[in-house]
Image (cartoon, rainbow, N blue to C red; front, side):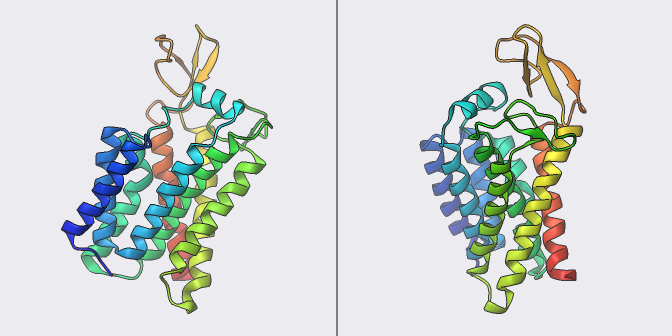
Length: 265
């Protein structure tokens, strides 16, 4: 079942407003979430909306879990607990485009791509939120060298397990709206899309994503200007490739893998 555009806009706006009031989104993030949600609800329907809501609610809940290592990582690297418009679009923009495509031609091929995309961003977000809770230091996925918690490309055992769990649960939510014969392909598409997307995110984060260093504070950061006000120097990566660009790339990888599993598996 699809929503009318008016109903989709009303529902998405209500959810985004509640998220804004609870401190999960900035004002700009709320507007972006309302747009993404409206497109997904109207172009996809109930099943698509349920997957999107699961991602947002579960990720927001995990984001509220706190630990000393996570607090240190957030102080060094994170933008803040509230997601801004860029972050919302980086995580949900590809899903919205896929829903728009489905709304235009109604083809069945859009659905597994959407599942894979949402599984990828869920897996990545869960890995980050759970991995930074760990008291064991992460290691860089490309070299296995220990790195500071929150470093792009850093992974932990807990984070990897969380990414798998998040991807599988996206598949379970999607399967609830699918015929029984499609349950296994849907879950496998989500699991594969989530894992490959999360791995792509980590590899890109460890290689191409820009990483900076504040000489004044002697701290690594992802910002060109550190919170102390000093300009940070780039140590590695490409200047225009930040965490949001990497998230978009991971979502695309997840979509391609999810689609391949169902359509060519």
